[in-house]
Each structure stands twice: as structure tokens, then as C-alpha cells.
Length: 291
Length: 253
Image (cartoon, each protein chain N blue to C red):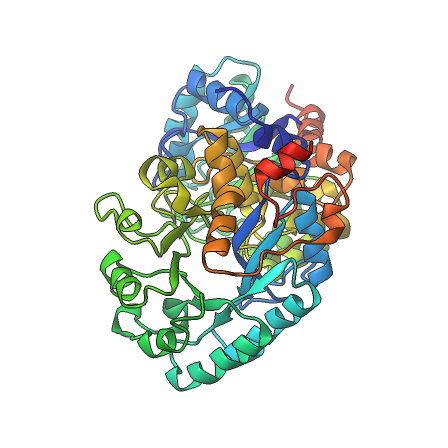
């Protein structure tokens, strides 16, 4: 397979400036329960995103095994400083349903566009939980719900059918979709690539397998940064033996299309537009015509 | 940029990717696709099960890009002395020696045969690779404070460490700060900007490149290094130069 532009740029360590790159699974924070996070200040993160050419990150708190409200606020602050670079999601703690309304309303005021879930890490059995009260509060807001692990396709399908106004994202490739065809049947379900590089030790599918099995327009790029490095997600996509147009879709075009569908504001950061940088609000055709 | 992989495996293992090579031809093919120019090669059987059987399985290697790593069995009842083991390894072209302390619950500082071997390797400045793996992927297997003690006992011995994932980085930072001869494979460092952090505080010579095979997508860590906010010189050092210097500096005659 001929080397495409994306792999060529990654091999050189140059930013992917020719395409939109939207990372749909990131964390912000200075420390997790496991580790110290290097260079975690938002300005350092933005600078690091620029090195890769990551235009925008959907982001949420790191290590939400503790007080969700406190951790969420760090993310909201980053969004307020860099609204064109970060879209925050509100993390809920599965053990405290009584907190969900307040967390959601605070998130709404702070610019949140969705909910992040992580029940197993919070010591709660996902399959014994009912998230419906939380989802019901935001059912018509164009929010996304990104879960670390939905556990079973049936569990996810229950919510996706009952809340068609929400978009459900499978945070990691941890479900087996080969049989269920879940993403084909449900328009509001998407798959994130996050941690696919840990295949088969964690992920159920590699990037190449995802591209072969799943509808390519339903795959969203996600890195888990700052929990993981942006490179652990971008690298495997760049090196994957899949068509260049599929890489472009995964890295950003799919996310851009989703953001349009659910009427999120499309960030249009002027600093980048001043250069030869792809501008998120601009269609690729328009940009190419300009050239 | 071309890379020199410090922990390149041959053979199958639990939680391995389908592309993990079993033959020299496959190894070279994987290396070409993922930009690796040279590799220190161990056999998964050496790491996971039987050092000597794994060492024999490396006899197929004859390409100069592939430098064999011989694994050492520290069982005290083995009649062959560490001196004779090392002579045999050197005759077979071994460029480094590997130990997996976890498979056998070994204490590096207290195992008599490891201590004897470490002294011999230190005399030659020949790298000791410490691979931490049990049966399935686990994070934070390295006992960093024990490793500090070991590195201080043999301060001229290059000690290269690998594990599936080093998630608790605070003890690792302590180990880097307390030693001078400890080096870590970057495929163990999954957190964002770990390379830059370590490089800036401890120096680029404390990191060596590895694809993370056989357990991780081999396209992952080139970009972590390539996009790190460090100098091009530091990147070249991590990608290949440090390991190259270690191999060239080792007395293998």
C-alpha cells in the first residue's frame, strides 16, 4: 500500500494540518489515582495538541473515582480558557444518583455537551444501574453519552432506543459488534478508537479490524490523553493498512459530521486559520478550492 | 527516523497481536513496515517459560539487523556457572542478557546467580534487560525501589527495564532520580508527554525505543517519540543512538 499523507506526516512528526483532527476521548487533570500527569496545564496540553495537529478535544475529568464535582470543574475551567479547543463532558459518579441532577445542571451552565460514565471504576456494577434519570434530564439537548464500558450490546441498545435524542459512544473497543451489528442498526451509536493499540490485551479490535467490521462513518478517533499519549491513538491509525480516506474519516471527518448533526458549535479557531491550517468550520472541499 | 528496538520478540505469547513474528523473515518484515532498522531480539519462550529453550530458538537468526538476547536461568541448582553461561551466550553472538524476575519470584539483589551474572556483565558493560511479565497483561509489575538497590550495586551495568505498562510513575521517577544506569523502554510509558518529562528531568539517555511487541500495536510509540516536545537530537538518541552506543561499548570479545 502506498504511503499516504497521514503516515508520511506522522513519520516526520509534523502536524496533521491538512485534515480536521478531533479527539473524542480525552481527560484533563494533574494527577490520577495512579500517576502524576506530566505537563497537564491547559496551555501545555493545547501546545501538545498543536504539535500533532489535533484541532479539538472532547474532554472530561481524569480519575473520577473520587468527588466528581471537584474533578469536573477542572475540565470546565479549561473549556472556559480554550472553548475553541475543548468541549467538556460531565462525569457522573455511579454510586451517587442523588448528585446527578446537580452535576448535570452545573455542567450545562459550564458548557458541557454530554455525560461521561465509568461505573466499574467507581465500584458499581454497570448492569445493576439505571442511568435513565440522568439521561432523561438531557434527552433533548443534543448531548453525547460516552461510557468507558457499556458491558453488553443489549445494555447499550436499551438506552440508545429509549433516548434517540442522545448520541451514545462506546468509549473503547471493548464490545463485540461482529454479530450484533449494533452500529449499523442504531443511528445514535458510535465507536471510539480509544486504546485500540492495546489489542488484544484490552481492546477487542485493532484499528484495521474496526475499519473492516464497523461502518466507517461511525468510528471516532479517541486517544485517552492525558491518560495516554495522543500518539498511541494517532500512530496506529496512521500505520494501519486501510485507505487514506478512512483514516481521514476516523481522525476527524466523522466527528465533524456528528457535531454538525447534533448542533454543537463548530469551533473555528482563528489562530490556526491564520496559517495554512484546516479550519474546523470549513468543509474540506471549500478549503481545497481555496488552494 | 529509524529505530533500534531494545525488546523485540520472536514467538507467540498470551495477549499477542496476530502480527507478532515467529521467524527471522517475519521479524524483518515487521521491522520494515514499522520503521525499525535494528533490534535486540529475545524469544518469548525465554521470557515466559524456559530460558534455554528460547535461546536455542534464536539460533535461526543470521541477519545483522537482529542481535540476539540470551535469557538467563537463575536457578541455583543449575551446574553451569554464570561465567560459562556468558561465554556460551557470547559465542552465540548474544548482545545482551535478559531476565524476567517475575516468572520466578526473584529478588535481583539477593539471587546469588543473578548477582554473579550482574558482576560479569558490569565488567563488560554488557546490557542486562529486565523484562517484567507474568502470564497476562498487568500494569505496574516493576518493583522500582528494589531496582534502585540493584542498580546501585552495579553502577556501571546498563539496566534496561520493560513492562507492559508503567502506570504508577511516581516510583519510576524516584528510580530514575536515584540511579544513573537505569533505562526504560518507552513502550512501557503510555501517559501523555512521559517522554518529554523524563527527557527534560533525567536526560534522553534514560529512555530506549521499543515497539511494545508482542502485546501492543506496533504503530504506537514512534509517534509518541516523534511528536515529543524535545530536541531532534534527543529523539535520535532515544530512537537508536543510546542503544547503539551501549551495544558498541560492551565488551563482547
